Length: 81
Image (cartoon, rainbow, N blue to C red; front, side, top):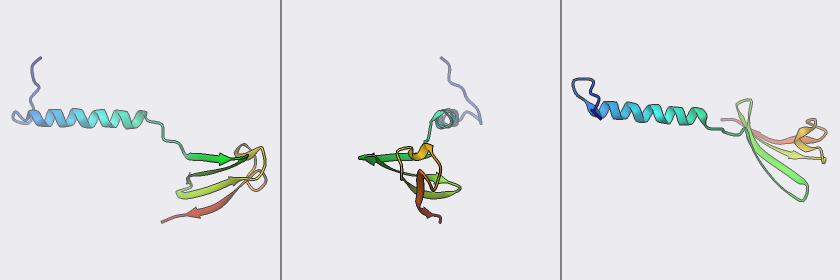
């Protein structure tokens, strides 16, 4: 296979462009969760990003995060820079 050359023979530029394109494709295909959920004994918490802020929430009923804020779960901390 012949090497591609552009920019007056800079084969390194071709390689760097290919690497950048691969990282862009992998990043676009990755799934980054909004929340990380943890728990024990029926009580669950989560840490995540909501509305541009870092938040911590905790469940209050068995319905949990599938329910209504203030009834089934509530925010216990919100931080922004």
